Length: 364
Ligand SMILES: C[S@@+](CC[C@H](N)C(=O)[O-])C[C@H]1O[C@@H](n2cnc3c(N)ncnc32)[C@H](O)[C@@H]1O
Image 1 (spheres, helix red, strand yellow):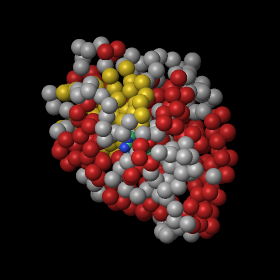
Image 2: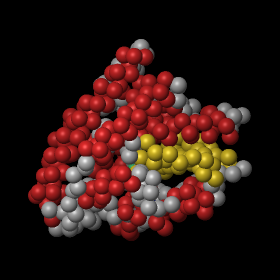
Image 3: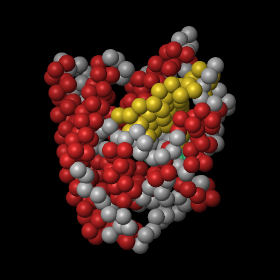
Image 4: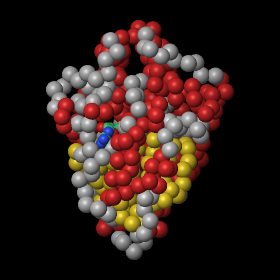
């Protein structure tokens, strides 16, 4: 990935200075994101008048949110210092991409307002073969123009996610790296990293694979996604990184094109809230099938209602602002039960900022 703001690439920063630089960098992204969302969400509400209104968050909720974001950044910094991944990853920021695409985020808003006003959630400008995709997937998720099915959508996606998560999207994605690395070291200590394989399920534009490449430079990486446009974008981003290129394939995560027990580790980030319940179970069953005995499966997705009831207004706002047809079911779904149904042993479940993680192991 192009990194125009990456002072740590070549010169490791002294601890105090580097840490402050990282916090300042993240703080700036958070301020810009909050300003952007405040204006764009209110404009959308005013112009398009969606079915559900946006709830104003209380000062306590905002403070708690800020506290959890800081705790996330603290962890992100610490794990870089511990060598889970290189410090340079913390500063990877494609300024050119942001500057090029930010105006397009605004230019796309009138089309979004139009669809919201017309209550249209399944419109695609690009001709698509509907039979090639599961029905639940053909949605303008987040009201995105073309859903996941165009190059334009793939170009804007990363910036939109960064704005949504106040610049902390990658810090949340990186929280899968430590448990995965630990799982690989514990279960496959005698297998050289170059003979290990890790699959990222629903890799999108490849940011999780980017983190995996940095944390596991010798491991063979694989990514699947249903969107060829997102895979194309992932390929562009990943091709710029030195080392073996991850192998990308278009596939439905409910039916993975790999033999049983092929991977030493599997991951999936921000997929499950966009799946209906049956598909969620099918994907977990498939992750189980392709993972080796002793292998680790790490999921990162949205926080859920039972463990963070204080953030209920934010979860409600998420469905008011975005088209997310499966989110309401997801936030109360028991993924531990689903993982156990598939055969996994759940090792750990935890939250960071507005995300939640499940670390599961396939018994030997
Ligand atoms: C919210 S995005 C997350 C992408 C990426 N993991 C990230 O961290 O940004 C959801 C992704 O899941 C993919 N997806 C949704 N349903 C899928 C399915 N059944 N099989 C494969 N990919 C799917 C979409 O194409 C999209 O790239």
